[in-house]
Structures are given as C-alpha cells and as structure tokens.
Length: 407
Image (cartoon, rainbow, N blue to C red; front, side, top):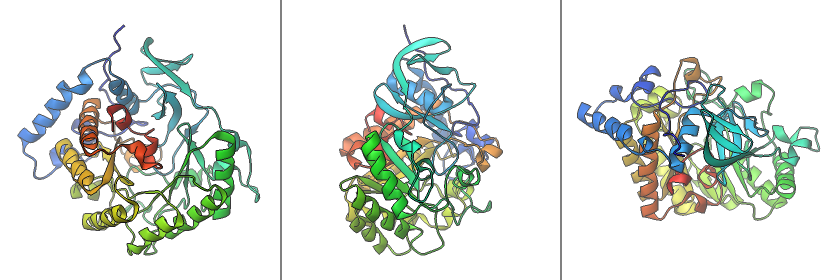
C-alpha cells in the first residue's frame, strides 16, 4: 500500500502559518518581502510544489504532514498555551519522540497504535507517551509537580522558570507566543524556585527515566534578560541530579559575560532564539524582540559558541512567517558556519496568540519539506546533529522534522 503524500491544505488553529498565500493571510507573505525578485519567489514556490513533499511514501513526508496538519489523538501527555510550540500531544512515532498538534479536523488519526490517513493505515507505529508518575506528586510547599515542569516527548523535562515576559503587552508581544496564557489558566506558576525545580527534576529522573532538562524563561527588564534566574536554577538542579544534561534558553543578555555564568553553573547547551533573520518579518511578528538588533544576536551566538562549544548553541527559525525560503536556508547555512544549530520548525498559531486571533494558517507542507531537507543537508555536511547537543530542543527533536531528515 502506498501512503499518500503530505497534504497541502491549511488547517488553521493548531498548526503553523505559512509562506506564500498562507502567510499573506497573516499579513506577512513572501510577496511583501523587499529585495526578492518575482522570479526568485516563483522558483522557491515551484521547487516546493514539485519537490520533496509531492513524492509519497517517505517518513519525512508523513512527519511534516503531521507537523503542519496535526492529528486526531487522545494524548495523556499534552500541552496547551505556554512558551514555545504547544497545543500538542506527545507520542512515540516510529521509535522517535514527537510533539504533534492536536487538530479535531485532521485527516490523520491514531487508532490502536497505528497512524491512519483517511482511514488508511500508513504502516507507521505510533503510541501516546504515558502519563509520567511524577505528575501525581506535589512539592514540599504544596505545588503539583505538573505545574512546575512538564514532560516533553518521551524523556525530556521542560520548564519555563519565569512565566511572565516584559514584552507581553500587545504592541510588543511575539505574535506566536502564549507564555502568559497558561499562567492565566492556572496550569502553572509565575516563578519556579530553584528548590522546586530540583525536587521535580530528581523525581522525574528517578521515576520516569528523564534524560535531559530544558529551561526557558520569559524575558525580564534586567540587563541579563532573566539569564541569572536560569543559572541559579541550573545549580540547584545539578546539585540534586548530578550529570543531568541541561539546556538554558534566553534572549541575548546585555552583558555577554552572563553566558559564562550559565556555563559555570553547569548548563551544557544554550538556545538564543531569533525565530527569523529577516528584519521586516521580525518587526511584524516579534516587535518587542525586534528592538534587539540582529547584530546583538550574532554577537551573543559567537560568544555562546566560544563558551559552550560548536553545536552546543541553537536558535529557532520558524518556517511560515513570510521569510523567503531561499533566504531562510541561506541564513541557516550562515548559522551553521558559526557553529550554531538552526532548529527549523513550522509555525503553529496557538490558541490565545495574536496570530491565531488574526486567522494565521499553516505553512504549505511542500515549503516545510523543502526547507527542512536543505537545512538538514547543510547540517550533515558540517557534521552537526541535533542529538549531539546533549540537551535542548534540537537534542529532543520532537517539534521538528529535522531528525527524520538526517539533521
């Protein structure tokens, strides 16, 4: 039986907004981007439509179809709102951890451990990640562990240390971010203390076999942008669980010496996430963060590579914000040359975000496949694998198809 190709229709909320026509609906299509000729844009679109996603039967096509269009799934481990991609359920798909958007209208469905498309078995085993035992516990000060940190994929613990962001007022807010919505719903707490994080991490490792920890934070008004909260938390966790790989994530700090503080605290990897390398796209989608110039990101990445090492630094690049695909790939290649891992992920308009409110749609699956394959090829040529980061989003890989593409 030949599986179908990854579909290309948009699903709306629960997936990511796209390049080309889909992104134009969100107000930031490639046609608005200054500097690209119509011929350049046409070549990008033609390659996407006639290229990888049009060939059925590959694991990458299926993975991208799921990432863009979501799945009907009853998932014991799932996320709603918060920082980063969410509104998803966590599964083991063909032996890999994956975080898939849950979309009630998706043509993909999980039934009896099999992945179906319009009722056809695609021949891919898939099982929801079981509810972890540490979720049933409460901290010494009475807070449910699940409100302190969450399981991501099958064996990654993740937390947002500070659940508020100085940039969350609507004029400054990142249009894809829902960091404070989970706080408003009561699903988490505003500030996780080092003692709480250490307690939960120890239990998650002991009871559920967690193998790495990812800690992000909302940005603060302080010059360190919240990085010192991460350093304090890292020290506490590693005192409780020596040797646990930890990735920290923050904006470029005003004083780059803070990056050395994070490494000295025991962090093994760092994410400094820019989301787009196109200034026009940044101004549209991340207006507050766009006040931090790309030069500041480049300086922070360079210093982070010096401190943490090559392929221990990463950044999210979102596919579907309107950046020209060729320029996105070229930017990813420049990051790779610096020793920075470009974690390419399809944009997903989450419930409660400005993007979802404004009707943003999923990116075209062909564009996602094209960009993912080309970035994965560049990573392979440079000898950089996400798994080698030890900890973090690239090491986990659940939110991206890069692992299936060989990145």
